[in-house]
Length: 270
Image (cartoon, rainbow, N blue to C red; front, side):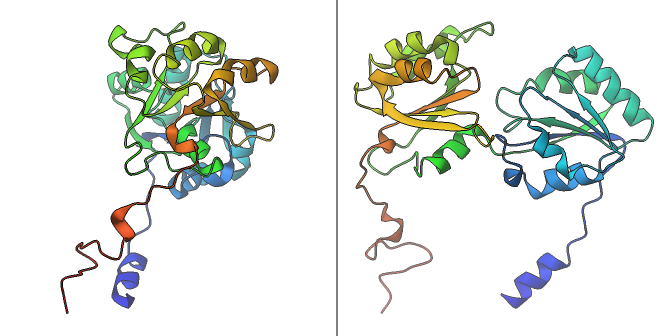
């Protein structure tokens, strides 16, 4: 253990590059859920562009006082790219902050394409997604042995259409742990489709503005999902987790079973 610890401490400190745009996942809202790398980048950044409609101001507490802070909720993609390219070409350390994890519903694909066309290097720094924060708040493991082993992350069609092959009814047929993003405005339609395969008493975690000061979390039967959304006046920043794992679960993993023979605990050695 001493040798292992020594190897970690001898690693060189990460050096951030001024010719790179760092796209960071700011998590669902709570600044304490930032990764260490994301926090370090905010502390060193000359310029921070952040999606102010989804990323709370609390995230900016780590920025330098002289950092240029640019909210982007009202800007077009081209305007955002123009600023990033200009600041990188001025040898500034540029950070672009998105809510949650950049791999989910963050619209970074088109940004990466335009940065590449402008010959600007970029790095993606992962973050905590809302479904992970929600499961933690609900004190739930979404993959329970013998009950459910699949997690589906999806949404219903709105202004951004969902492909026909990913239509909610077909996904519900799996009866997996289903995490429904960006769908509060279509909750009635979503509930009808989910009820075709999930029992009406399946529990749903209704999670609004996770990690923010006005966070709300309700656990209701699937049949009450739409009513709960309306009564609480919940909006687009609501995540629904539909899962048999939210119920009274008694299943136990074999990982810690005393009779389970595995690499780090052999039961056949006397």
